[in-house]
Image (tube, rainbow, N blue to C red; front, side, top):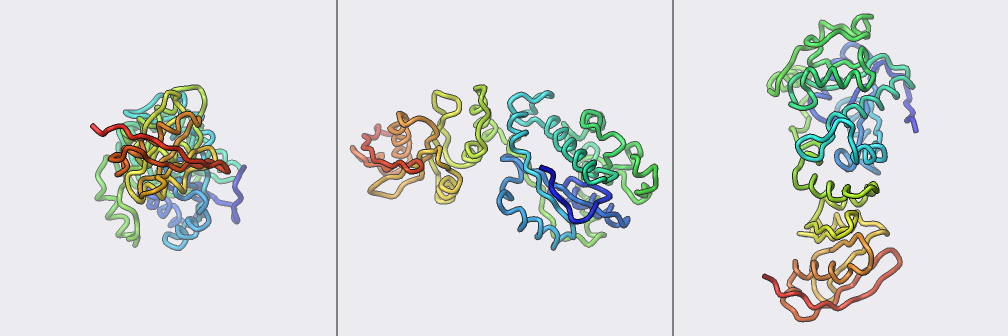
Length: 330
């Protein structure tokens, strides 16, 4: 579904929430152009905004005076992740396919809204995989955004776009930044009066080796994992089961427990110790694995010291209790 905008934009911009994308948008706004920013989300980046989109957009408007639309890429992204055309990065991160997907979606939105340019905060040479000059040009070609895609922070190092050639955007007011250094951006932010911006963070979770390994486990079969299953992988101790899509997760602390309960749905078994405190445990799989999940729960609680332990479980409207005899801890 194409999101609606209240006013026809002249420029569409990708908003990552980082300083570079904020600067890129402000540089175009300074030229008197109407910019509509887009923030793409998936279970691997930006998903904390899910179900709070209006609140987040209002906050961005209040802090940066940027009009923002949230676009959830989850369904298409999870399909692509199974077999990205241009492969994975160091871990399970499909950086080129990801960038191409986002820019293709941005191009479609720009065409729908009749915008004349697409802006990103990319800087030549800032990222070794997707922001090399040759990779940037290749991404333009594959996303069909050549001539439309403008990177204001590095524009003078790249060929002019149609918007520059036609006089919509003044190229002389753009920059020639390159490399991984942050000092020029910080200085520009100070000049533009932008003080409230996030420090560089981890970005996409698929670049994290531990998390990427968990996700890869769920992609061992032909079926595409559910978004909620992938969200559960962000918390607790992970135990894969025989079937690639099945697993047990045991919370490590109170925050994990809260997040697991918040994220689990009616397809997941939720286990608790009946007579003492212990971690929340989630089972994705058939009921035959309940004893195994209960053993993992006991292993990470004081129940491991007992000879017999009662464990409650529930899944949707189902519930029950089982008794396990914990294996002696090594």
